[in-house]
Image (tube, rainbow, N blue to C red; front, side, top):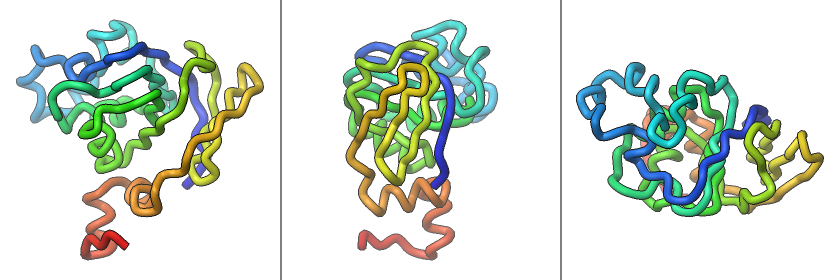
Length: 167
């Protein structure tokens, strides 16, 4: 898995799946590229139009709370976000991120500011804040999750390995 570099987009605590994929746009669930044009617009109206390929979503506590909306992490990834980093995640949202191939990392995000340039090394468990010249460490993902991410998500992982083994 390569090193990921991008800009931080900082969000607070309690960002729900309704903030990520607004319920009023329910009719777009079968058109994910169109829905991705509205990702996180209820939390930050300018996000979807200004996010760049490789940028990071930085959250507070309980990121992805609410309904399971499996398309929420998919449209974050489709918008070009390379990873979501938060103090904590709603359990289902976290697993949905891994299943679609979007890294989700638990880390104290207080030291990261809006617009900071970040460099993420998933395999070594390091996040470098290039703007502030600081390095943060996080526990590496379990090998199975790392393999799923490396393969591009759960569906691709199963296609590649022809089965799903937990060992």
